[in-house]
Image 1: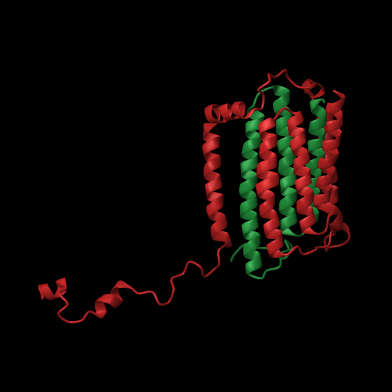
Image 2: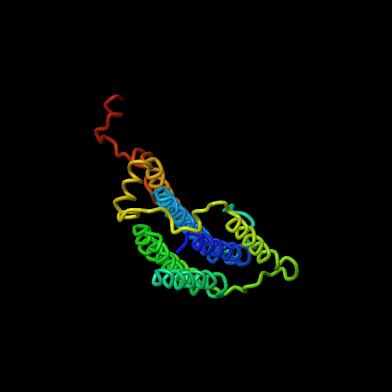
Length: 99
Length: 200
């Protein structure tokens, strides 16, 4: 397959993720949509790594995976803390992060 | 060649379908499952791009560990159905989809108008070990050691941060019946042989 196909697919996935971040209200689903966008970036990085023929894009993608895992852990920790304090799990109601 | 194209279109359809499922399904639990399907499809695409190690890491780390974390939190918080459409009906409801459509048009223009001639090729000629764990480890530990160490430090910070965020609020305070040094000294019986009595 040509590299361009992979890049176009990655653009589609990125836009679907962006639409989800803009339209959904539950922070859980917004985190999932952020994962979609990060994975679209990963796909583009690996496609370009294959195009150039060296490993640097793949190392980048691996680091992006690490950052995504950290982001998930912190985001889910915040959601659990919100739930413990009986706050609504809704980004429209969450205007500030002060405890 | 034909098999490769077939695999690309099957995995690509799976990836797009999974992504749409994440955005459109109303129950967050189903969204998580759709994301698992999406991630596995992406792993197949990584294999087509000869990134074997990353495909394995995608399945084991992402579709395995991270998604289990999601499932636990969804089960804990309770998968509350939220309405798909945002509350401000009218013009404000259209902003998100319009933004995404504009982004897609812009990205399509960027890809179509790109001057990269290699986009229309199958990529550079690579050897058999391209994307293997050995090759990735060699690049990571020889050339990108600083990024590797920074990533490990970031993971440590995230782990500590998650523990601090998710603990019970009164968890780390001192219990009320804790004894202090002053209490022990005050209730000393006479002639106990302390240093204070010896000095006088």
